[in-house]
Image 1 (tube, rainbow, N blue to C red):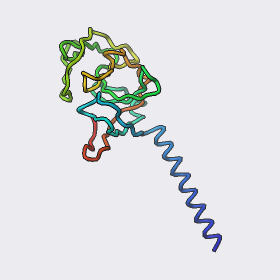
Image 2 (tube, rainbow, N blue to C red):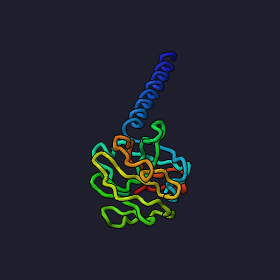
Image 3 (cartoon, rainbow, N blue to C red):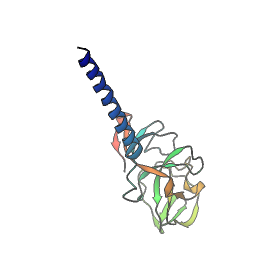
Image 4 (tube, helix red, strand yellow):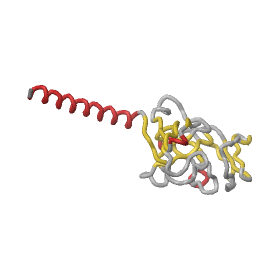
Length: 172
């Protein structure tokens, strides 16, 4: 009788260890949940929303315009921020009269509700950098203020809004 209990306990411990190791590996290398802090991505994302981030997205590919990314803040490296990619390497970005232009053409932004923005003279995005902006332009602290974002700071692509459940959806 003692042998069965011992083997059952051992099996439970082994299962828990395997589960913890798998959870650690998945969180470290594949996917991680992030909580949105602040209002800079409204109306797309709200304060306290939770998003799932694909950490492998840019191991095999490069960020593209319109994607929402999580990155290490260039201002405070202890913080992770979430913004939208507006321009990628080789593109020239500018902002005039609350409108973003990429390579001289108006960038369509149907996701914007709040457009008020400072003007930004044309700037070419160099290799290894991105231009990012929040969807709530009047209050977002983004590339318009801190400049180009080093791609090495990117943690991954936010692809799923999973909390709160009534707002559950895939992200662009």
